[in-house]
Each structure stands twice: as structure tokens, then as C-alpha cells.
Length: 456
Image (cartoon, rainbow, N blue to C red; front, side, top):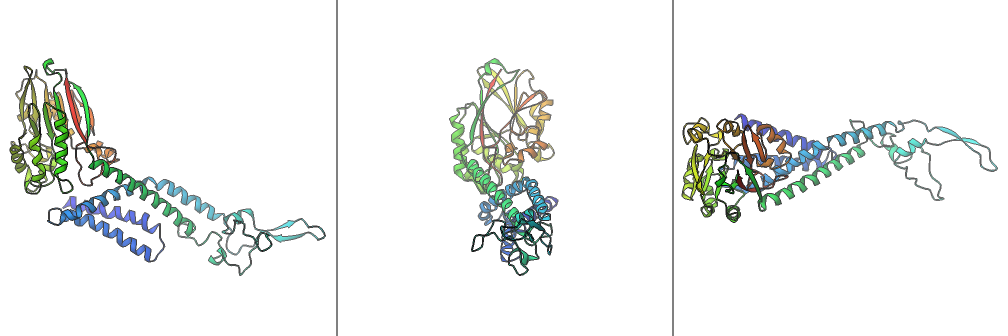
């Protein structure tokens, strides 16, 4: 309940902030403000209803509009926060300009004007240059004979009707209302264009083909006969209401094109039960590799209604071997590589294969002279892997941040966000994942399938 309350609080606060900047700052009291407020409230309600109805039959109908608005909302928030400083500077400039405008009822200065030919000199009322510049009539409108009108009469129309302030009526902040609206609408327009551009590009990236990342990784203890052993690594496929069987078929087709010796699926395969998503997982039976396909659980396997157990059995039926706190020997060219896998930390206490990670069960008692590759969903598990002398850990979980600047937040929890890193003596590779979670949007973190070649 605490987590739900926190999520609701965040949704309400973010939408209130959006209302202030996108509605209140861009409209005056009236019908337009009422309509825009109602639209924003409906979008906030959409997010809440979408989350509440995820497990219901009609919930998938709200998935696309709900998650797309979640992405747009996030980037509107980001752009508006970035624009707070230029917005404040613009309002400050307008307030200072407003203070230089002539005060209501002030008489124009009288200055001496040289006498024209045949007439005596006289003092006439001529507004100061600053007053003219601030006046709406500062463009220099002319009369019938082309002479510029530089005087104000008590009955004249224009800015003097609004209390005598040439800059127009003033709001609580001291800036003229018209200029404050202009600044608010400019900020809203920039944020709106930026958010829509980011989300549009991000949708195209998320729904497109994953990038093939190829790299060699040197392991000091690797038997020379294992040089060139190829591992295809994929994570965070996230089969769910926004994906289809085509998503899985494309990933399988791309992995098979790599002709890898081992396929490693490093968690977060699904966001639902076997009954809901079983057909989307069927293409996994077509995975091809010399020494088999292996799987370890991610945190999302523990979030499903049936828990990870039903998916463990389903994957066995599809020819993918789960590694539940265990290891296997990959024999190649007369040498042996230990391939181990541990459960995700979301499994709780390590009470056997059905619980959380058990490094002793997976790695204890092995021949330490042989190289070991560990499959562990979260990079943070590398701390424990290093204590057991693991040479290489393969992880996912982070999505590379998925939607920048989330990558900055991910780095606060995980030691590595994407790519290679080092924890103790253990090399770590973190794949960005081949799918997406939540919004079908990836900004700055394209989906990935990785091909690693082991070298001594």
C-alpha cells in the first residue's frame, strides 16, 4: 500500500505542476482554462485506471494510450524543469521593463522646443523616450498629415484605459499580463514540441529492430582452446500487452543469425502469466545454438500472478534450460567452461531453486582453475560474484536507462548501466535489453542483442 500511495502522490504532483505551467500560465480565467484543466485531469485519471485495470480483460485497451501519455508526461516534466531558469529570467526582464513604464496619472515632461521660423519658442509636452518605447503606440502611428502623435489626451483610447499603464494591466508578479501570457505560452510550446519529438523518436526506436552489439572479452584464466567461443546475450524482452508474437519472432531470428555457441536469456522475459503470454513465447522453441539456450529469472518473473515457477516449466517445454542457482559445463574443443546462473534478488531468501540467489549452491565446490561465466539479472549481484571468483557476469535489468535522463537515476542503484564494467576482479557486461517496460519508448538507449566472443 505504501508503494501505491507513493505512485499516486507522484502522479498528482506532476500533473499539478503541468497544470501550472501548461494551463494556468497560458490562459486567463474562462472556458479555455476550464477545458484544458478537465483534459489534464482526465489524463491523470487514465494512468490510475490503466494501472488498476492491468489484470482485467479490458485493461489492455488502455495500455497504449496510457503508456504513451506516461512518456509524454515525463518529457513534458523534464523540458519544463529545464526551462524554469530561462522562464524566470524572462519574467524578471519583463518586471524590470514594467517598472520603467510611466506611472498612472503622471504628467508628461515639458521640454523646450526651438521656435520655428516666424514664431516664438515655447515649452510643449513631449513624452520621454523611455515612455514612448514602453507604449503600445511606440511603432510611430501617424495622423492624416503624416505627423507623429506624441501627446496623450485624457479621453484617448489604448493603454491609458487600463489604469493609465502603457504596458497594460499587471498581474500579481508585477509583469504585464499580456507579456506574462506570451512567456508562458512560449515555454509551453517549446516543452510540448520537445516532448512530442522525444516520444515520437523513442517509439520508433523501441519498436524497431534491436541493435547487434559485438565485442570481444578477455578472461585471464580462459583455456586457450576456448578462444572464440561465442555467447549471444539477450535480456528484458518483456513480453506483455504492448508486444506480440512478432516481437519474439524477430528476436529469435536475429539471434539465430549470429550462429552463437551459447544463448543466454538474462531475465525479465515476461510481464504476465503463461495463460496470457504463452503464445508470444512459443517462437523461443526455434532458438538455435551449438550448446543450448539458458535462462535465469529477473525481477519481473516474480511479479507475475503465477510466480516464476510456471514460466520455468514453460521454458523447459520450449527447449530453454533454466539455471536456478546451478551451473553446467560447456565442453568445447577439449576444454570446459563453467556456465552458472543465479535467481534474481526479488526471490527473497535463498530457500532452494524457488527462492532468491544462492551463490554457494551455484558456484561453490567448482574447479577454480576453470573460467566461469555467470548469468545474473541485476548488475548489483556482481559484488557477490566477485567474492566467488567469477570471471565474467552477464546482466540486464537496467535497459540502459530506457528513457534518458533515467540513466542518471539507474546509476544510483546499479554499479553499471550498460556495456562493460568491472567489480573487483569480475568483468561485467550489462545489455540494454531487447524490449521495453512500460511506455513503448526508448530515448538514448536503443534495444540490444549482444554477441560476445571469449578470448584468453
